[in-house]
Image (cartoon, rainbow over all chains, first blue to last red; front, side):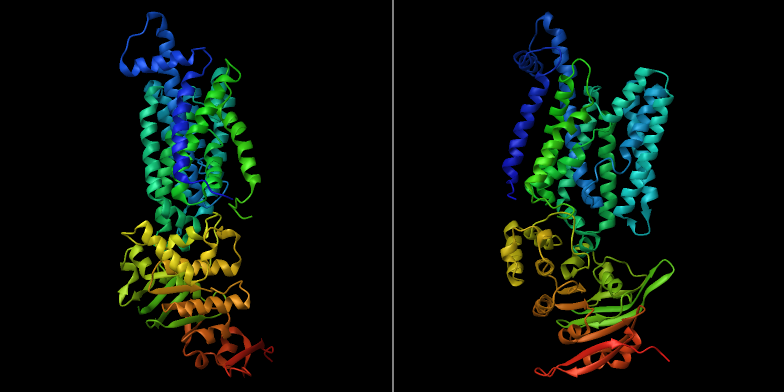
Length: 345
Length: 255
């Protein structure tokens, strides 16, 4: 299959991402026109004045839509980058950021806040903080169980992560079923399927910094990831210590996943499929994949979130549903085009 | 570069896989390890290319402990073809060969390309550069992996049964590529006739120990082969070349 040159593709994706961000802010249920949106954004940046009648619309654009769209891009990029890393780390085509059980661990914490009122003292931060803390706790547990005298072996990581994820999901389910308040249970389910509905500016800086730092860290180790993908013995012979690299990858992916899950829940599909789609387009070399995948993930999630807001207005579909609806056909078409051989022909 | 394995011992839990192995590969020679399955050949080789840390003993390159080197420095001296030969990732041949440049610092893209092109030329895989590694035949894959090892510009080459799953022409082809590399070579081999024909010295390993060492035809004696492999060996002369070949059948059951 012909490969697409990386640099033009990355540039195109950056432009597309900017356009998508703009569209994402411009589109919504409250009927604020694109012209108005651009004017509000311009006013916000340049510090202009707006008529008193426009304040409500201005607030919607700046305080509700913009942080949400930016967060969607950050989350999409983070999930895609982590998906690439995890697939190389465990050398498994089915791996995604959630295969290590981190997101379901985070969900336990988040649901404890929503349903049981844990960490109430933290106020608005309770949800994010407890999701992040439980993600780290889940990560420590997976690490402790998966570790053997040979270090973190791929299969043990996948098995441990998957088994513990079932355990965490059971806990969450018990909490959801045990909760009397219907609304809380609904939002817990919503949260499990992923949503950017709660996005605020307060969430953006930390998430953006962690995702960007994780991306840069991974991109700098692209060649080592190539070696790791060829096998532990090969990577040792190429001067890349596999057990150490896997340990570092585990920490980095856990930190990024935990951060992303804390602000958006477990949004499926992006972390699993975007890396595959990108490999089909640019090949398996991690330098190329890591240059493109986070951008593609960001664009995908911005649009998925826009659609989730628009489709059954005013109620929202979970964004994970949209990522699947958008992504599965694209994936199948590319798969049928042939020439993609992850996991054998 | 001279390779010394000095008293290497490897344990896996309570089981001793390799016990106090001592052997030397002189600079530029090809040394073979032969022995039954599970005798510890791969385990020993893994200690040489640093995939495994021995419980005791030292592997030295020109007198220097490989464990005292950092991973990249060691990988610039020793390249390896481990038994795992495939990956789930669909790298191109050029990408696989390019991985050989990983241990080198101060690289330039142009320099890497030149080294990789030369390596692929030497093993005859230049025309495959754009192909997917997973789509290649077994023989092509081994040639590509040898090209990767050459791109590493090592001085020692470690091979773990490089002729596995290859047809006879490709077996001979791979071994002559290795021989012609001019590197110091330590290789595990299953086929005793191939080992005898391509190695300067052989070490027979059984149950984690070296039980015989020396030039091939001094080592591969029928009594030793009966003891180590449990086969009856008949040395015969090749009617044209005169080289000694071994024919095998199973030992008759002990009375």
